[in-house]
Image 1 (cartoon, rainbow, N blue to C red):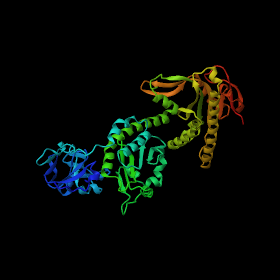
Image 2 (tube, rainbow, N blue to C red):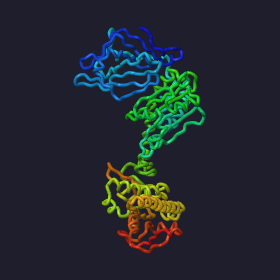
Image 3 (cartoon, rainbow, N blue to C red):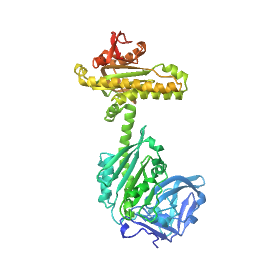
Image 4 (cartoon, rainbow, N blue to C red):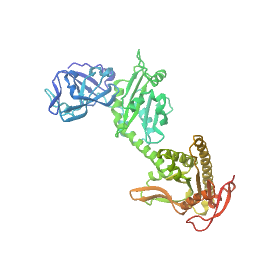
Length: 535
């Protein structure tokens, strides 16, 4: 056979890429029809992968092929385009592919078409068995990353540590990486992903949260990352050649820093989520095919290890968003059964929107939902800002706690922890009032109805844990103290005050409050002293 590849030399012997002419007749059968039939195919040998046969397009029934949007990326072949094959009533999805503009190492297969043997009926080669039965070609040397990947990578305590270990494994294996960039997309209302950047400068891995606002940032819009997230495949840019392609700001920036080669590619998870991965080097001549082959070979398994870390982070994110940080941590620690929980001493916060029924009836549903979001940003947002835990949104009301300690008794009531929790809750209430005034100024200027609220604060013991049915639970607080907090908030309208607190609360911050007298609370036995802020 004639070797038509430029990719076999001593430097690249560690990861073989070889393309040879194949004089045998090869046919691809699907639904009784030969969709390809040629005596001029070329065979690609790559590392440990099975040989792949590429057909000249003139010998392929392109009239039976239908282009799809799928793209895959290889750092030494480039971006592959895919086709469905349709014959009669049968269709094989993404069963054929081609490299329209391959990199130098694989230019001999440019425009040629290959087929997945397991998506067609048969790949028949004259003088031999079906092509799918041929064994992989062994690589000249073992992949230097495999031992690390199998022995150490699964034990990495975090994604950040995993990036650091990966960088050092590449350097130890002779792969001259200078920079690694990985962005893992995440489930979070404010973040699109977590970014990890390692450079060979002794500073370790820099981890950053990537906010959703980056989707409108010019640095993202004019970057290969955007293309990757949209499923367009990857790219490679040699930066030490005579006329480098400098088509993105990041490419120009890396070249200015001395990079000689830059490869960015998709980093998919098992569920189809596309993340981003790139490496760069400063070595003269850039990465070899062996370098890229060894990295490319381990990426599928490496992505599964990253996926485990990402799933845990997503779980934490969702638990934080839907349960709160403290409640979410308890659920993640195993408090998942009905009745699981503990008695805690806490400040209980209950807040409510005034005249919500009238407001809901006077405006479109979407406008009322925006109004509720504004209101909760004022109230619940202030709670979170001051260390509280928002447990429930009940229509237009919210229930929150500022934990003091586990079941406490009189010692905890008199403790500095209780005073600090009351001070935090009072600060949150004051901030909530300030936020609402600001919102009302904006709404008033737009001739929109202004908002009113009531906040009730109480101190007491509650059960903090899971309630509900065995299959549908809510992490919340129950107990007489929680009921009393709701009744105290109900007195805001009666006493014309936006904040009303109990005597149990007032005893910890007496200098900040003034009395409102004794009042009976609905459903509560004796009348109680109630207080509000001093003017």
